[in-house]
Amino acid sequence: MVLDTAVAPVVIVGGGPIGLAASLLLARQGVRSIVVERRETASCGQSRAVTIQRDILALYDRLGIAGDILRRGSSWSIGRTYFGDDEILRLTFDDDGSSGYPPFINFAQYRVEELLHEAVRQQECVDLRHGETAEVVHDGADADYAVVRITDASGTARLVHASYVVAADGVGSRTRKALGIDFDGWRTNGRFLVADFRAELPFSAERRLWFSPPFYPDGIVLMHQIGDDQWRLDWQIPPELDVDDEVAAGRVHHRIRAVLDHAGIGAVEIEILRCNGWTFQQRQASRFRQHRVFLAGDSAHVVSPFGARGMNSGMEDAENLAWKLARVLSGRAPDALLDSYATERESAAAQHVLVTGDSMTFMTPSTPEGLDDRNAILAQAAADPAKAHLVDAGKLYVPHAYPDSPLTTPGRVDSLPQPGSLVPDCVLVRGGEPTTIRKIVAGRFTVIQVDPDAPDTLTFYAIDESGVTPLPPARTAGLPHPLSHAQAAVYLVRPDCYLAAVREFEDDWADHLRTAWHRATAVAQVSA
Image (tube, helix red, strand yellow):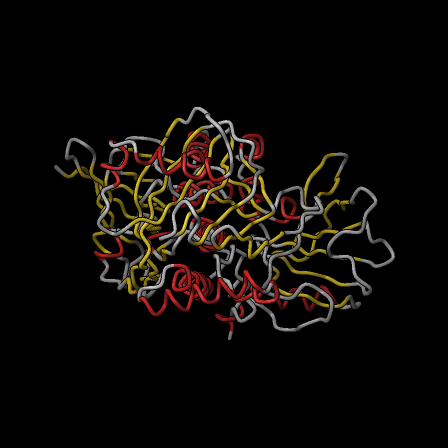
């Protein structure tokens, strides 16, 4: 049975982390959405993404869910790589504490989903529907809306006319397949058993990766803490190995025990919490926009987890798309603005697929010759620390910059943060309350003015159709902020905290940034 047609500004297919985050970001802009999730549960409950990069944690803070992550997660800033028993590479990520967030923090994906779910349940703008399915019947070509069929558990269907659709329905995206969008790429040679377990261990909160360790000479093992005496073990396994059989036979416990024995840790109680197997893929959709439908997260791109470039990148998809949808739906920007989502995020995905593909080719070579070459490089690094840079143990996530975006005004200013990059963040005080640069600027276009004679002060302006309006200033606790440089400057910041334009301070700065604002909202494209 099909009920009467309903209308919605946005339908989000998939209530995983990316879909939920997109709905929250839209709600903060006053945009209503329907989120359709096949599962009956609030989370996947599986061992999936675990490492949250600092800039994504800052986004979670703006969404109101970072408190529990900071309290219960495991922050780290050191990654160690071993070949056999030899430490051959140590990566240290600087953390002076100025941003308020650690470089990386481990916190299980299913818990992030639960926190997002709780936040969504408090939003009147979000209609979250569990146990239902959504099918895009028409993608909105040559129409003012897309058509989505939403079917509940009883089989009752309703057609929804949606101004736009966000497909965040995962790597097996039915939406992507139904639209005929290619998802080209390749499967890596590596298959891994992934186990989360609880144990009281004396290890420090570091990332440890072993190539051919004494307790498993035939593969790779990765272990790190994920909070609350919980740990994650990634163990390379043969393609034919049955993970369920491993669990039933107690061999997962034996694998954990092998790592602990190698570290000289005596008898401890081990509780296996979750366990599953993964064969990693490197894929990217051929396009992220088809008329009124947008792909985001794993439905648009999927990469191996060594580098934490999956869910972190998906969150940037959500934030990039949400502010653009909000502006177009409110009539403040033309539809052309939405094309920049595909331009920017396709570029980001291609970079992440390239980087992680190189990592997996090195880490899990597909031929005996490739394995010999890899081990020769590892042996060189063990013998000579100067060769450590040749080792690829997974290059960790950094946000992708958009210097070539049609929204970015070119103009490099030496020594200043560059257009297209994320605005640097730091803890500030404003009106007697603690805040950060990104908390102040997120969600709207903002101008930041800095003066080298006042290196602890930032001046803010709102900028929109009506012009430039002063906002309350903010200060650091007496230390220079990250935008403090030798020259006075002004920055135009997008709602997703990316720099749309950077200029040295001049008397006519407001006119220049108004021109840059027209470019960043795609108004200039239509005017041209």
